Image (cartoon, rainbow, N blue to C red; front, side, top):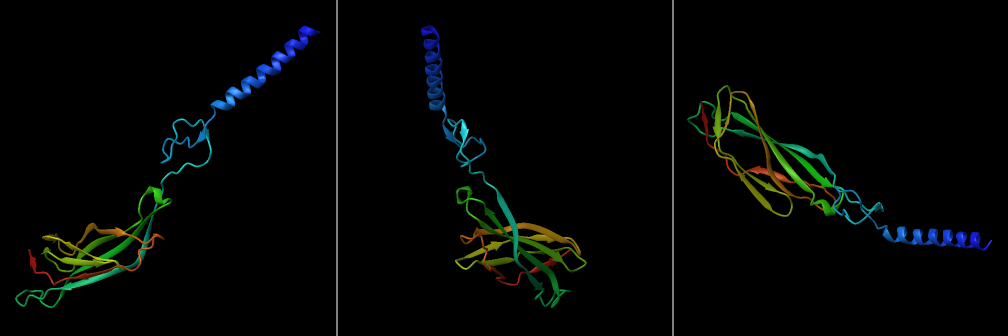
Length: 179
């Protein structure tokens, strides 16, 4: 009986010792290697992983600027020769640790005349906290075509990811040439 008692005590002690050792080796933390706060030492995920996800949303109304040719000797004098279409997109993150939310302005320019038009417009953007100018040199657009310029300016949005109401204007009427 003593031997079986001893064996039972050894078994219980061994189980307790095993439990203490294995519990002592567990470290909780983020186990997702793609997360910002990945913990290489963690072997038990605690649900605190921060993975970055972005959301892109069209915001505001498209802004349209029609530009007419003011050159008195031009065959298109007084006519609208291009239409500039500005669209706005808000890019926001699911966590401030992933980056700053931004507002991006994109531009497409439509040629309204049956000849290739070349011009160099200067636009000014105002987002409520400052101005930014964008100068485009020798934009060439085939007859009756639309040219996608793409991203023309980007600025940090408000804390809520809201772009507000940025404004865009043409600083001066550009000179046009036609081919």
